[in-house]
Image: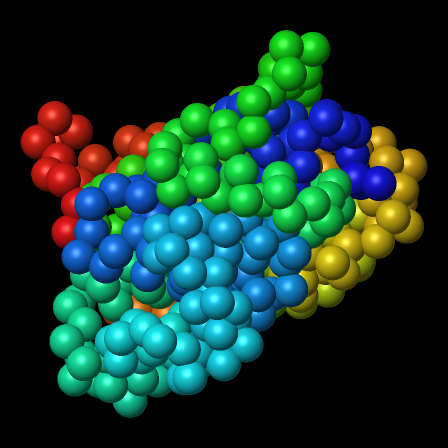
Length: 192
Length: 177
């Protein structure tokens, strides 16, 4: 049961977005810029970073939906699984492994990012913007994960739902709902 | 923020809605939540700048801000805000730490559903902003007067207006990396 009356027809962050459209707008926009817009890191690589951090934060809804989006981009659910459990062994580039290491440090706290981890990413060819975006993706998922779990949103264990969401996210990005909002869902009363 | 205007925009828009836009929680109360979470995350820049904004909203009561950071239970603030700060502290540790009991206590003290929602999201957002600032090892000047002045200006003008100082004009913003 969610801590506040969120629309029961919608899972995870979708229910919180429908509850408070004013905050949904910048939250969607941030995810869209970070994960979907053109970038020298592929959308698949960025979704893997989001999935890995959500997995470290044990947020089922986020790691499953972003894992599904990553699998869609990469054409491999196996790679996603390996990145979550042991990314050093995953069939991804050395550069991405070094960026995942930075993302893991951000997850445990911003001050835990070491000069050595940043240098190692640079040695594998990571640019300043790629390092910036990795830090911000990891930081942003420390927010999204806490938002989803902090409200105790409904998180169905339904693989086909996540596969559908992942396909929508991979194709359309984050500006529009990945699950259609039923017409009867009303946002919370607008602020004074 | 100035390094990447494309991400600065939604980050400033989010802070504006959460902390500055009209709300049944006062801007001072919301800035105290942001300051408290930033203090729990040990982010010097965020706790100092948001502490200064909170003080600017609260008749320059810097002692109150300090008290909320160190021991909010004994601070001179409404019971409702204390219950919301308890929820914010749980979110800082991890979303799953928030209990039904915490939420019921906030409701008993008069908190609305939107106020509980906004508290969770402010706390979660500062777990992002704090990590962003410290994760990039940004330059954080240690000059209280500088933060005080900036706090007063941000309290008055909000986050989107302040961001115009360092962001290129909207129409001229270039595409991603």
